[in-house]
Image 1 (cartoon, rainbow, N blue to C red):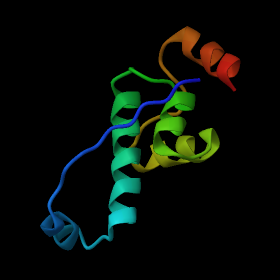
Image 2 (image 1 turned 180 degrees about the vertical axis):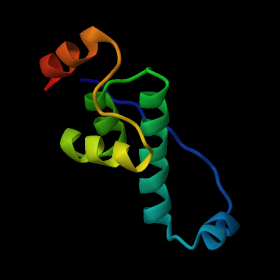
Image 3 (image 1 turned 60 degrees about the horizontal axis):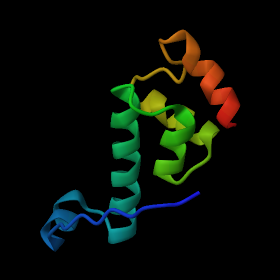
Image 4 (image 1 turned 120 degrees about the horizontal axis):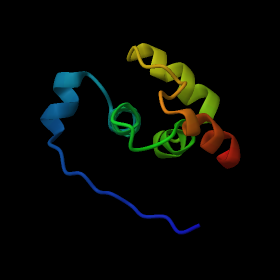
Amino acid sequence: MATNSLTITYPDDLLLSLKKNRDEFEEEARLLLAVKLYELGRVSTGTGALLAGMSRVAFMFELQRFNLSPIGLEPGELTEDFQHA
């Protein structure tokens, strides 16, 4: 499977204001991107987990922090997730 990379420029001041080091911020940014795409219905939990750099189960637990259900609203989504698992 081919992979791509995304580079986002941000100032050091952002890290200071968030009280995070570079690795913590970038990990959180990946998670937030994955969660938002999941919330919009653009990715499944499996793809969201890949984007966030964690296991699917861990991503599903993280969704609870954002008041999102790991079970999609569309009937075919669960079947799709099982196929990608």
